[in-house]
Amino acid sequence: MQKGYDLLNIFKFMSPELIFGPEALGQVGESLLRLGVTRVFVVSDIGVLNAGWIDRVLEHLEEAKLSYVVWTNLTPNPKDYEVAAGVNEYLANQCDAVLAVGGGSPIDTGKAIALVATNGGKINDYEGIDKVTRPLPPIVAVPTTAGTGAEVSQFSIIVDSSTKVKMTIISKSLIPDIAIIDPLILTTKDKMLTANTGMDALSHAVEAYVSLAATPLTDIHALSAIELIGKNLRNSVACNSNIEAKRHMAMASLKAGLAFSNAILGAVHAMAHPLGGDLDLPHGEANAILLPYVMEYNLPACLNRYSNIAVSLGANINGLSSRSAALKAIQEVRQLSTDIGIPEKLSNMGLKRDIIPYLSECAVKDACLITNPRKACVEDIANIYSKAF
Image (cartoon, rainbow, N blue to C red):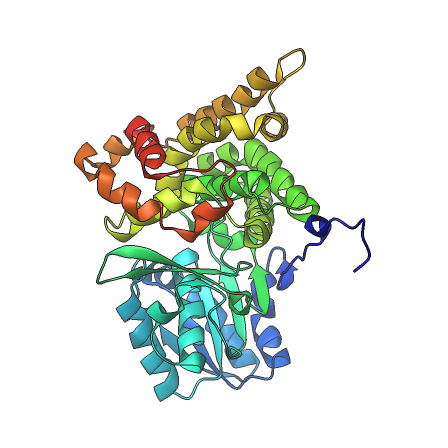
């Protein structure tokens, strides 16, 4: 090998085919046909079903003369036994593709079903990084919330029901073949879901931007997402009919998803996962509460990057020291959370301090902690949790 090359400058960037815009949902049948499928396993949840979006999806599948099976037997923090039930239905109905329509729960579950249906075993066997060995069936993802980024990511987060801990499954094979993002779907989401998922997207973008695995390509998407969220999340929460705000938030979520799928995440998600696993709390809300406290912990390792985040969120840092400019980023995140009604403390979610040791032991084992910009041990994690209470 020729000397003088920095191997750290070699990086890759993965993405599905992207279809974005109002009425993009109409492309779902044609997209599946292009993938050569005949019988589609539609994974969603009751909320999306009741909002009428599955009926719209099925109309497009019928127009394309595709047969389908609809499966909605999952919960907001999907469990391993729910994945197993979905696999049984997928195989029993001889499906050859997965169409996941919903937020992170249906999309993550759809990915997990596709994985186990073709690789065998149970979803718990694939916890960790790159344990998938066989190709998955075609996957098309249609997000219904502007936040999770699951439609473009190489992640699937599933609860291990025996330990009640969220498993992080990471594999390039989990990236959907096609992601269809239709901002009009966001108009049926309630105020709190809009706020929680929007802050989820912000946590994705911030963690990707300061990740040890960040690259120039992920940086572009992360900073753009942060700017879009700073300018549009308040308006999106305030008014469901604000199509412009919905469009910008859909794009922000997409960009944040592309950033974190390739740069991975950090301590915010490592700490939020046990809250959603054992306690079944909303993932976006947990992320939103933890984000400023984790940012404070990571501050010494992120002064310049936090300064850039502050600017992207609209702060004026002219004349400030690097530390003061970085602190502006944390202040802006806190103000945004307050403005859209996010609780400030974990105690507001009904949690008690005596759970901190258990949560800390879980978080320190999470794969997302590997790329956190500042090393954190169990005691460090416990201290962050304590401040967040």
